[in-house]
Image (cartoon, rainbow, N blue to C red; front, side, top):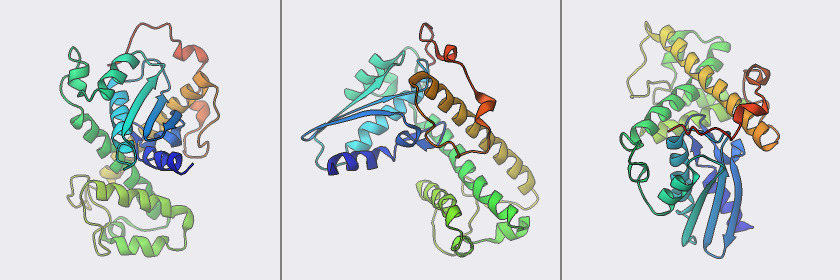
Length: 261
């Protein structure tokens, strides 16, 4: 049991790049099989034609994260029920890059795409925290003057909001920014300070990014639940009504010959 818990702790670090949620949180991990020091992880996605480059990123991250465990000697990753399952599984399990696995479609490696979606994740995590302070009555100048110590002090008695700060601090650290108590709390993804005059437009653009991610999250979850007859992984984790993106089982028909690359 301890080994499986360790594997799932590593899988919790594997993020769907488009949704900024972990694969276990989304319910995408199908099975974990452990035989001594050998691990097999199978996962599945909302549709037969989910973007191949995203699927490859997730498969690589599963391999790399689980492979960090000192007792793991080999890791096999299996993407199930996908139009490119064979190519993804062969590529990831033999150590090929995305361009090597898909030479006819790759325009480069996945680092640039991964960075683009991590920037979106930074913006969305930050926006959720910013909206909390706006609802609390902080004006724009006061928000821009906040330090990380101020944020921590303000949220000390608000246990339901601490997760917002923790996720934001985590991605700040991921981006290489210092998380010292006196560090300015809210900065742009590139590390530049936020400007008071441009702050309203920044908030509007951030809100659009968040709404887009939340919509995609609901849409993918609805597709996944319809496809695999599962329950919502976290039905209260968004401001968008799930009925707004309800889909029929016909929406993921696997008779399609298309595969989104």
